[in-house]
Amino acid sequence: MKAGPTLGRRIIDCRYIYILLLPGLLFFIIFRYAPMWMLVIAFQDYNPWAGVFKSEWVGFRHFLYLLRDPWFFLMLRNTLAINLISLVFFFPLPIVWALLLNEIRHSGYKRFNQTIFYFPHFLSWVIVASLTYFLLSVDVGILNKFISYLGLQKISFLQKPYLFWIILTLQDIWKESGWGTIIFLAAIAGIDMEQYEAAIIDGAGRFKRIWHITIPSIMPTIMVMFILQIGRMLSLGFEKVLLLYTPNNSHVSDILDTLAYRTGLAGGIPNYSYATAIGLFSSIIGLILVSSANYTSRKITGESIY
Image (cartoon, rainbow, N blue to C red; front, side, top):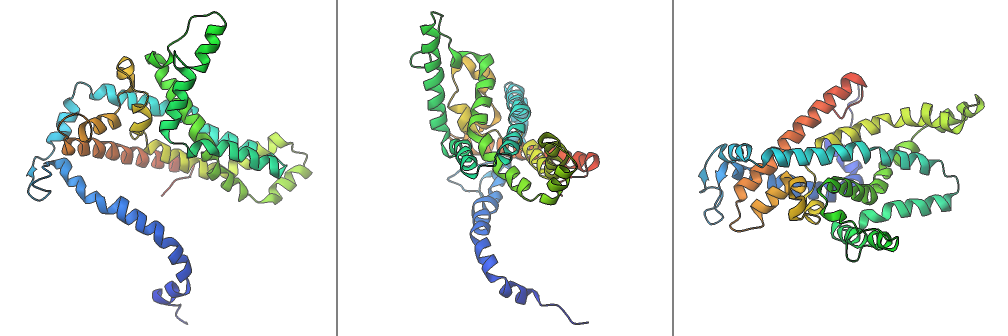
């Protein structure tokens, strides 16, 4: 039997593909994997002047301090609640937008709609928060000006704690739902068109083709994205919360990410070890959630990441 090409030969033959892959690999190695060794400071009383190797080792003291923090369960509740609301109301929307965009037959109109949906993704959270203030604030808010024009009393939307999670979810929907359609549109593009042609011959309407062909065909992609979303349950991103944070809504807006930010960067003397412990705790819980969701998905639907 003739031996196949060696690994070196295959790399040489596919060298241009590896060259294209190199920038992405370097990015993950330099900015994702290389800094991970600094997680050791979560188990130290880290002193920047002494360095990692000379800082005092304290074991799990910072994790125990986090679990004993009287605000911990409140911040955990807020983090989980905001992510659960996002999972229920935000996650399905990119799938719906992708299905709707796929049904548009006029290419120019389809590209126009895609551009409109994608554009908010490129705006920073600072701009999104500014637009939210411009829309909802009592003084200059367009919505409150309209309410005042109707002769009604203005509503302080941004100061109402019970509206905070709703506003945050609506921000997410406006900014990111259109961008999320890219993955599902790519999955739809890979469906064999002969299935649609056969369904049309059998008399299936547009809705039935979506229900019986499109959705089942992209279900593996949906499950993978769902599992990844579950893994981010404790990683909300502090910037979008911090920009809407006020003393009035602190009991619904304080999350683990904002605690890590205040501990590690803001306030008085930064406690890098405690901030790292908070981040590591969230990452470990995220890993457990991803593994559990992946196992459950594999058992129930047969689809999983690994």
